[in-house]
Amino acid sequence: MSAATVTTVPPDPIGAATPVEFAMRLRALMTARRRSLDSVARRSRDAGTPISRATVHNLITAAGSPRRDTLVSFLRGCGVPPREQIRWLTTFDVVYRPR
Figure (cartoon, rainbow, N blue to C red):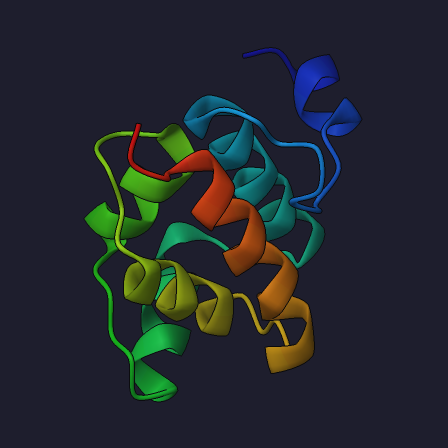
């Protein structure tokens, strides 16, 4: 993925239709909030919903099928307020709904 691609992806879930698109937006969120893999993992632990650095990496690279609670931990680690988390969870449910 080139730097030009990353800068054109909004740090917002609206419009993501595939796991890869959703992951790209999660990565854009991390970048916009100036968070690293380690800081997201540490902040999620501090928020009481710990996820590992590897799990953060899996989320932003669309590796596997994440659970909703993992996404909530990631969003908390990025400092996303609960009201904004709703949009992410709604899009997550559409992207990862059982087919």
